[in-house]
Length: 200
Length: 412
Image (tube, rainbow over all chains, first blue to last red; front, top):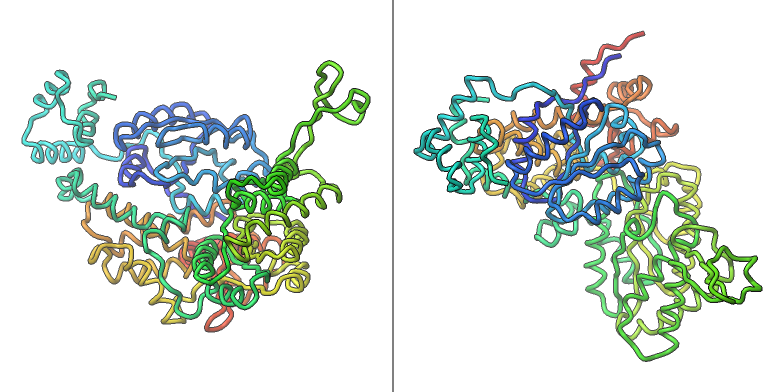
């Protein structure tokens, strides 16, 4: 029997989804191969900081549920990436399920990064926590581009039309550190592969 | 993505508008915030909150158990009941999420009593009365543990750190979970009695609304907590607590029913067979969304795919708003709901076994379901199979799953 799998999203699409969310207590989950965890966390961290304009930090679950909850409580950032649940047994997931309310802080969201195995353990043993994430549980299609080259050019055109500026003008303003702090300019520089000019 | 939509895609005002629409549907995690924003919609018939508040009005120290599936709206009912009870004279309702104070997965008899005692002791204003101060200290020490200096001669009986001729003895508290002794419970009850009398002048009868215990999925453990509920009632407190759906179907149901004054069940709203239920969910959408943002047919679709489960309605709507934002649309249309519903259905199928799929196929085909086995109860708890009790009792596979399992090829 083959069950329909989770929806697959590219990293770009996932970031755009996050961008549409207000500063709030909204959480999602991404199912990723463990060998790609480091790369995904790095890309999510930089992408969310630019597109959602908030401070991001990652919290590992490898020291167990209580330590994870303690680290979450101690963190003051707006957005958290929770990962490293691979050593968790069903009891640990059950314990996290009972602690779900402790993640409930106004204006703080996050992403839970899971392998397919840990996702199944979470579904089976932490139904309350999973219900809180659903339907925002996706499988990450790493390396896929959200936009084709044509769509990328169309989007750049839209940005040029919106601002009345050219790519060169935007780059010059960014180099002079005079670019207005609108998220559209961050996206523009990303599309030009000049994220090095984005001020953090 | 339609290319003509891209020019509008990144305009800040559009983003702000979508974020505002999405923020209005926040609250699945914390229903209290939704109530604060005035988003509560009264039930089509008398709500469980009204029923429970009515019973508390007649008998303030009665005990009430509210059972329901994940995301069925139990916390909202509890919070509304709190507000209703607080309109009564000489009665004060105090909401308490037990999961914030104790590890629910490790609950044992005595813990609920200790958590409740700490919460009540916090209601007492600063006082010079030494009896009250001592009782508050006793509750705190028994609940969270304490240290005391004891003579070296007693060392053998304690795990302790040595200071000169004395030992600092560590007395573990009840809340971090251990078996409490009758002596400790007696001390705790004496202290509770003192602070109850101190609180009575200001609050009248205190009614404790205990949330979070629905995450205790072992019905034996849950039934074991009833001793604390009875004790609290005997001490002169009203108690309303939420419990897991397993309590309604497990072997302890009769015992639970016999223990509490009332046993209520919060089912899903039957949006397919009850027009009032449909209108209720439509009002929930209308009170939160800007006028015209959700197309009427999209609202119908959201109500259908929610299955009448309140958390699914809210989460699905947020996900559909996300889809609308990504598509470049200016409002929420049925295609956005379809995309979000597909994601919800796929999420609900994650990790299911062949036998669980077969149960759902059987329910979808025959419409009959009497949850008995652990697998059947899990399907009910996780909202894959939904239970309706009005206008008639029936079960159905979650509507977001139906289109997906119809496509699943069943192997021999």
